[in-house]
Image: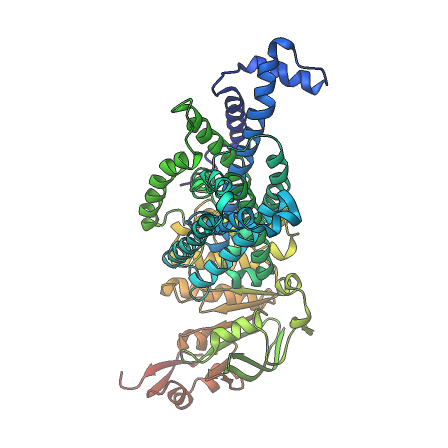
Length: 343
Length: 257
């Protein structure tokens, strides 16, 4: 595999994202033609009241489709970007927020915030992502320390530690939900995932965490490149490897936690997208993380469009689509890892 | 120039280096030999500043490296590690450019100057024609040359090498060591190399020091240090030396051959 087959990866990825964004806004129980979408949005932007003929479209767009699209895009970007960063951090191609248990840890944190009453009273909507963040951070540190052998993190121990800690976190999550009484509906609703929550409030609440976390990750491309040679060589090249690790862990966990706390646990985005990006455009993390960010949004938007149109009017949780496409891909990567052409 | 003064390093309660002192002048090559587990790799790690010292000081051109920021240290000391576990998805060009890390900001923005230095380093090490290849596709010897190119791109005056010839065949061993000798003698680099092959050390190092159980014996010229008697003691097998050629290079052989 040679790097740089496609000459304009950013242009290509952005155009693809733009196309899926339009589709995601247009498709649903009611199809809204792109021309009408433009009309409605431009009237809003000019501060004019909605055209009476287009009023239903206006309502659907602004209270349902646009927030859902924005949320899905943000979550896909966050999962793929942090998945790519975890892969670089662990120097392991199978690191993914879902497989290494970080998502489950974040889920436990989120459910704890939903079902135990203490934090919500203190922090309102912020409590869920903050508590999810604490769960994610704790999990990634546990998994890292349990799976590290000497100075490397072998795939087997990484996945095993991830599975074990993930199972533990899921069990605690179930326990909390069973004990929760009246709150169980909220927790199950959350766990089912999909961007089911409508309205702008969750989007605005997730935005700073996701953009903040991914923003930091996107600046760490060069440092992650150096880190691929191991901590010791990185230090000998002048990189403060310990600090880079800490910053990447915190930023990736923050982005993952924010994604998980608003749409539930969605697997495989963080695994599949960085991999495809690496296969097509090479392993340079300065490019990889940006392209994972863009294409992660594209992938989850496409999955979400499928989730709500395959069995319309019923909706599938988007996690089903990502798992149905991601799990076979994961198995393919496992097989492929044998001949080590990319890693 | 690199100086170690009474350097001790411990891993937990195990003392890996015990009060080591030596000096390598600019343009000099010090070869360090010793049995497995004697502390050779620890010595390289300590000199590169990635291990905390229990006692002593390491000075490069008179500056104590423990007082330097990581970037400053990496501008003065470059390490050529063994070519193991390299990330295969990087191209040779990308790898050599990473040698510029200590001269870049943390975003890693490269200037034309950086690229030019990397190109020169690759030309010097005959790796330029490999520029677009992935490291994972290269032979061990080629990977080792790429790591030398990366170290040269780092533009540090002190080069530390841990078993640089371990993966090379005879011809490449000789070419490599000739190149190292030219870097030291003509370009004034300070070189410290750890080698297992006593005969190569005897031929290419200006001075040799034996490292035994964490103790570094005083360095000297190869003929003085690499004697049958001292080596037999150190390696605990009977050895003999044969002097060959007009320059009387010692060749070390197990006795009985």
